[in-house]
Image (cartoon, rainbow, N blue to C red; front, side):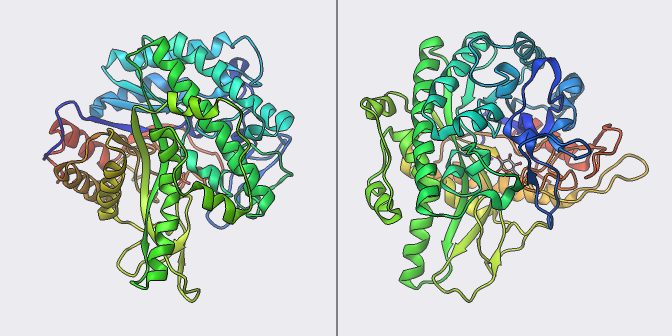
Length: 481
Ligand code: BG6
């Protein structure tokens, strides 16, 4: 195997999906705290007021807030070298536009980082993982407003200053490219909206909506670049990366029309990375915006800001691949962020996401060829239904198979020459699913006793994959069986 001796093996989480304690110790409500539970067949709802007798899964999550010591000890037992987590913006600035941070929030994260340090685990912190303060949505229409840049930078300044001795690795925005799609309207953009089903709330791709999305995205690009520059000034040792929802999109056939369409759709992978890694909008931007019939308002100095805040490394989530075709008469498939056409060569998860380990090798090569900077895979994994046996065991061989096949392809990619420096599989401990709000869709090495309705003891159990991953890390990727 080709993994370097300091390769970052670990796991990934997000505050809104596992912390709970949604209004404890001065925390404000974030956009995700307004999303109800759902299932694969029933959409999550977004409600502007928090309603009594309605279940909002983020409110308790899996209660990491009160159980972080136990959970980090379990990560350490597996041998984690890195733990990806996000900071909940509303724990630090409850409304987002205050001038003074909430001390209790800072204390909580300091305690978490100290606990990681105790075990030699390097934190990887996502500054914004779908956790925009609801107040910024309500009052400012989220990232459409340029003022959000200043609020975000104030928040970053607090984090960088307070935690500069604990955290070296940062990600500015989770899956920033979601904002090019309807799925990002609420989650990433924080656009004001009526109560309604959250997945389809992402409004249709009208010119007005596209215009909002790209304007908000421009503000995030500027905010991200300013954060990178600021971070390096506060601590030159910081490594600050971008995070892009990755996915392979293959042409469904060798019809040149399909090939061109797939190339165009692959730009959903490249557009944001191009800006954040190279510090400028890519060559195809003008035509793309012209086809949408929109333009982006830039202020004087924005181009220089983008240039001055290029990221140190590239990170991505990778779960699946899909296909593109001009032919309308084909089977569709669902997936993480991007939906597409079913690939007859691939199997799918219970939630219809197509499993494609080789697609990971392909994508890593494409990305490294394009950017030539270190890459981390900060999300990957299989959402599946697990059974807790009476003796407290969970036999999740399907998850082991999925992860093993992806790790093999990572090894191939490194042998191809890709500078891959870390792997933090998603939901290393079971947590709330983002798309459906379920607990039933589990990714973890650690099982959490809680069901879709929010009932359960919250007790933690080691799955078979826990012991397997421990061996993988111990052997630095040599022992995969
Ligand atoms: C990614 C998100 O898109 O996919 C995570 O960054 C999310 O927040 C993960 O949980 C898996 O998606 P889901 O819908 O299965 O939770």
